[in-house]
Length: 82
Image (cartoon, rainbow, N blue to C red; front, side):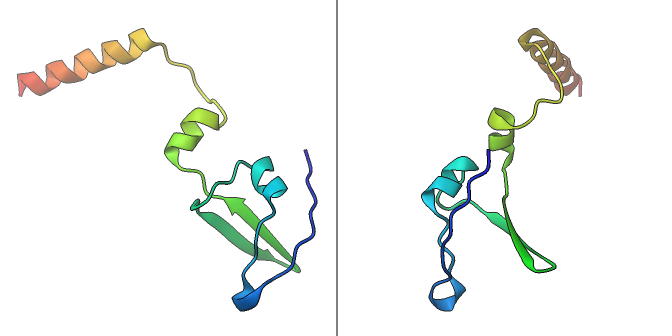
C-alpha cells in the first residue's frame, strides 16, 4: 500500500508526519525513527524494537511450546548441577 500526503516543514525544521502515513507504517508517539539523506531524498524508517518484531515482524522460524519447555528444563538442570 502506498500513501502519499503533502506536508510542510515547521519552525526549527520540525516535520509532522501525517496521521494517514503514521498509521500506514504503524508508527506511534515516542517511537524512534531513522532518518536517511540519500541523494536528493529523505527516507524516514521506523526503528522496530524486539517486542514489535516478535509480534508483527517477519517470522523466520517456528518453535513449539513443548520445545521451549524442554530447553528450559535442560538449562535449569545445568544451573543446579553447578
